[in-house]
Amino acid sequence: MTHYTVDAADLSVGRGPHPAASPFEKRVGEALGLTAFGLYQIELPAGEETVPHDHVDDHAEDAYAVLRGHGWVVVDEEEIPVGPGQFVAVTVDSSRFLRAGPDGLVFIAVCATPSRS
Image (cartoon, rainbow, N blue to C red; front, side, top):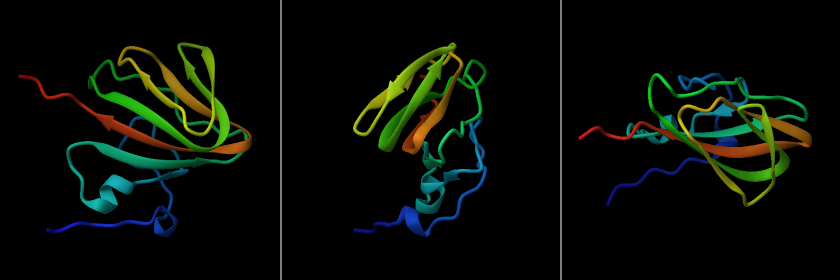
């Protein structure tokens, strides 16, 4: 059996191809060689934000899992507080971005376009 292991601490940060790409993301999926979905660890310093976006054009689904810190997922201008252990999914037509609170926000983002049958 073949497997790949990546430690996020060993990855550099930088903007990737996702519409919400930020200078704070680590492209974990790319490092693992994944092609079916995007997998990112985003490490937002206090007060920083991801890029507001939706997925109307590409129909991709986003899910977020908060690892550390606190902040907000802002969906269609509604601020939803999030903290460690919480998961959030946002519909493709809603505008969204994440904002870190005073202790920063570290989260995993998974992005995939469902296959059309």
